[in-house]
Amino acid sequence: MKKLTKQQKEEIIKRIQENKPIPDEYRFLIPFETEREYELTYADKERKEDILADTLSVPFQPIKKFGETKENEWHNMLIFGDNLQALKHLLKLKEQGKLRNPDGRNGVKLVYIDPPFATEQEFRGAKEQKAYQDKIAGAEFLEFLRKRLIFLKELLTEDGSIYVHLDWRKGSHIRLLMDELFGENNFRNEIIWHYETGGVGKTEYAKKHETILFYTNSNNYIFHPERSKDPRTEKALKRAQIPAGARISASDTTKLPMDVWLIQALNPVENERLDYPTQKPERLLDRVIKVSSNPGDIILDCFAGSGTTGAVAEKLGRKWIMIDSSKLAIYTIQKRMLNLKAEIGNKGRALKPKPFVLYNAGLYQDSGFIEKMDEADYRKFVLELFGAEPSDNKVKGVQMHGILNNRPVMVFSQKDYLTYEFIDDLHKTIGSGLKDEMYIIAPQSVVRFNEDYVDKGRIRYYVLRVPYSIIQKIQEKGFIRGLQPLSKANINQTIESVGFDFIYPPKVECEYYQGKDGGLFDQLVIKIKKFEPVQISKKPVEFEDPKKEALSMVMIDENYDGKVFDMDHYFFGDEIVKNDFKVVFPKEKAGQKLMIIYLDVLGNEKVEVKNIKDFKKK
Image (cartoon, rainbow, N blue to C red; front, side):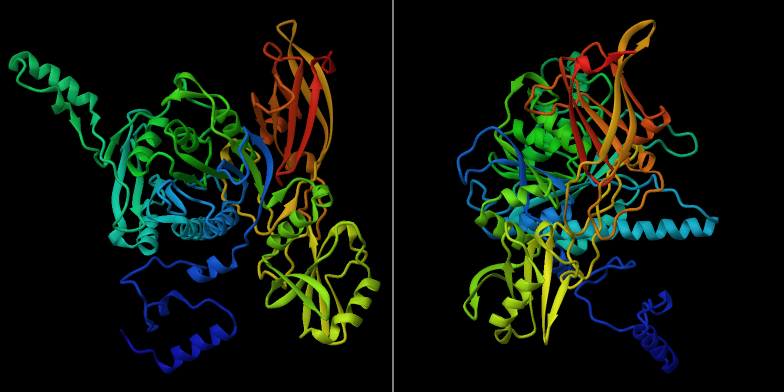
């Protein structure tokens, strides 16, 4: 390694002092120790310890239960929210002993993920500028995925396994990241999933495979080498049996699993196909789950998409946890789990799923539920929102409920008003017993002033409002709201959310009528006249044309049973805008009641239940 010159040292020190990046030319000149022989370096790569510590844990709010379970009995989990924040909460559940497998080990036995690759991004400017932007986007994606892999490793049991499904875009980069996180010695296979459909090669070889990286958490891991029949070998056997008679045994057609899997991709006529762009075949997950888990084990997929992992886990008698930040994915999965067929490939008899619960994580139903919660649940919920440790203690005889940054936390009542006068009285009573500051958590609706803190002499009283995002004092990251897609092209966008908020239904005004196609009133039409997000936030997202820019999608259950939304149609915002803000679908299969969900890009829903009679002939 070359020695740094005095001028180079001064340049590096100056850049550090000015909080500027150090140029690439110095990267290999700076001597530092590392635990690894090599690692993947890129812009804004954070320390593992900081990621684990700084990620916000968001509690799970139960939205709907499917099936009944006894108190403290396991139920499968479908979670809507940013998966990083949800994984942090799952890690808390693991630490509390609530992710228990049949063998007594706590945690997740098997992880399968098929992470998105943001390839639809458009960058404007010169060719060089585009290349630079692509490079930055690539680094951001790597760190996006690395953060999640860090938590997934922590969630795995000691004998657990992880399968990461990749295509040609970032496979080599992710392999290096996984070597770094899981250790090269825990790399087991680079599995090639080969299929014969798709991929036309005119200027390059046709792409007919994807890659699945298989790592374990240790050398002690579950692996069931089940023998499987190879249809191509069977055909060869039949040909060979003609000249050789019966000397070749049928057992010769079976083989141990290889790292090349000949499993056909889904095609439009297959029974299991859903109208979801990234759906994977059940036979693929069938092999993964059978080989790397036992009945009753917990399986996790935090990029759940169409829900293939949970569907197959259910059929194979495993427990499951699925997470996705897309409302379309959540409603697709909900419908899928309630309409399962017992056999792989969605065939055979109907299969009633074991009880599962739909949760929200980080984006909660309207804040009115805070006022309705009983006192104990309310305290537990809001303390966890702000990352405070529950702790009953008293300061000068006044009850406190938690500790945050080594300072006392009071959870203010949902039913009283927090005023300047209250803080005056509080300061007179406990001010002399405080070091420098304390925190008061209160619903936004009961706070009667605008400041985030009130100073009384040397003591500062911070007010942490629910549902506002975490203030700068608590988290050095600003609040970021995760976005829902406007089109099919960006269904797998990798925008993550930081913090938490509540769902505020957008303002929607529509005309409902029956339209003609071929001279008959055989179409139902929803004409959207007004669409406007409701944002109760200090930093609302700005929209020049809310009706055009903020409408994510419209989802429809054309035979609503009054209990469960069973999605039949969905329309992306870009399609609706092109169709003059009209949603059109066939009347033929519509029942007496329809449930319609209007979704904005911020994840807020407006729900309407309409009678078929509300659609007037026009």
